[in-house]
Amino acid sequence: MPEPAAPPSGNGPHRVLVVGDLLVDVVVVPDGGLRPGSDTAATIRSGGGGSAANTAAWLAWSGRSVSLLAAVGDDPLGTSARSELAAHGVEHLGPVLLGARTGACVVVVDPAGERTMLPDRGANDLLGAELTGVLLDDAGLPLGQVGWVHLSGYTLLHPGSRAAGELVVSRARDAGVGLSVDAASAGPIRDLGGGTFLDLARGAAVLFANEAELDALGGPDAVLGSVGALITKRGEAGASWTDGHEVLDVRAKPVEVVDTTGAGDAFAAGFLAAWLSGTTVRNALEGGAIRAAEAVSRPGGRPHGGDPSPSAGS
Image 1 (cartoon, rainbow, N blue to C red):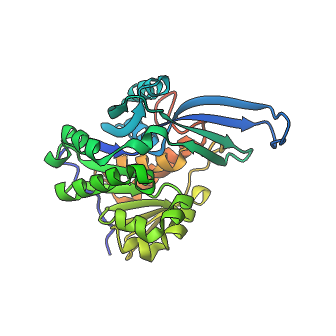
Image 2: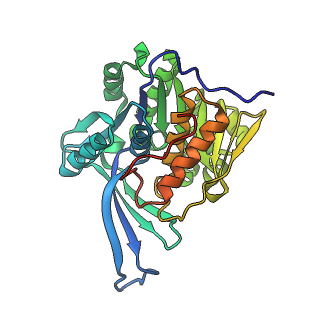
Image 3: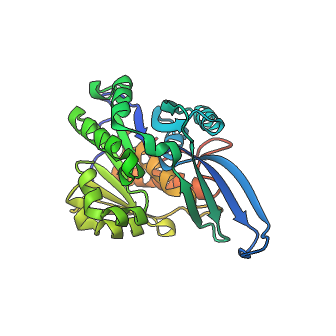
């Protein structure tokens, strides 16, 4: 069977609409193990976060025109988060909600670079369907002015934003616009139920999941009963793509791991940026691996400093 081809790059618009969460991360790297009840020296920094916002930033870093639909508050954190997005070249469509708190997340990174997250979703849980519909009309999604939609699974996993996520899925489907969904997090998937999540994401062309998320969703057969293709992110073991008939694998790029925060978001962006340029799925997987390697070799979940490495198919 010939390798599946990407969507044709010569037809239609190229702007990607990313929908989901925008947070401010506070990243804590303890100097050794935590000492409960006492002090542990640590390096602490803050920066932009949120799975959807991270993916949007990496897409822009990869040369894509990208808009982000995500809720923030009208507080100083929201102003900072929006300014950082603009610096990355991401258009923030809104909403900015009066009196709401912008979401924040404490990320604790262990000596191996693995991260544990403590999120306060704040305004992200106030992304309602009615307001989302207005913003999607402004973004031109029903008119085909968006070439692809990428939805963070967090939007579907939390009740406050679920209706907005459902609306995005149905609008993309009705408009004939390609849709990818990131499974986001294994624990909340189990809380909701893997089958329920897959029903909400039904019709997506691609679903991104790590191995824990895939297990929570019920495995590859369950996923492929709802979406067109599954990309499984395996960290240092690389990643794979399958449509149920063929499997393609890519190795991870060898780098020194500093911080795994946002690695999956960067992988999704690298894959989509390459795939939407018209390259093969195999080359797009390589593009994802390149961006993931960049992400884990630096602190935080966003690109910063220098020029991006060339991605496969770009």
